[in-house]
Length: 127
Figure 1 (tube, rainbow, N blue to C red):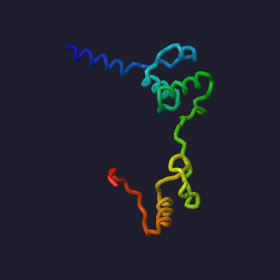
Figure 2 (spheres, rainbow, N blue to C red):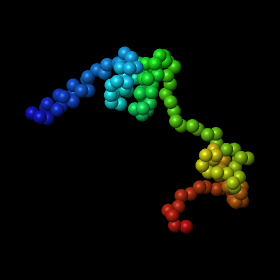
Figure 3 (spheres, rainbow, N blue to C red):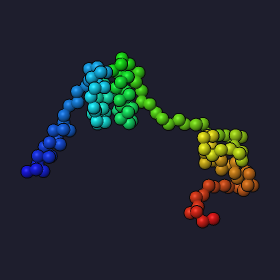
């Protein structure tokens, strides 16, 4: 009996509609779970992915008057251009410089070591 009640109760919660706040003040005065924020964003044609803080930000923008068409997903990922052969040298920093363990780097090290083919290999810690 208890199991049947919890199943019905959970089903009702899943089907429950989320009310879209009519003002920024109303939005800020209530607590929303992330799943509710996703539902509201989806209904308002706002981005639906990201952290709860990002979803709150999108809704704050919208309720402050920004049209949904102007609210775009914010991406953290900043892609650096990879270095060319001429830009790589023995002093090149591996992190934050655009260096990549790619064919250009392989060619640089093959030329440096005077070998036909160079490859990056993982070791198990035993040299």
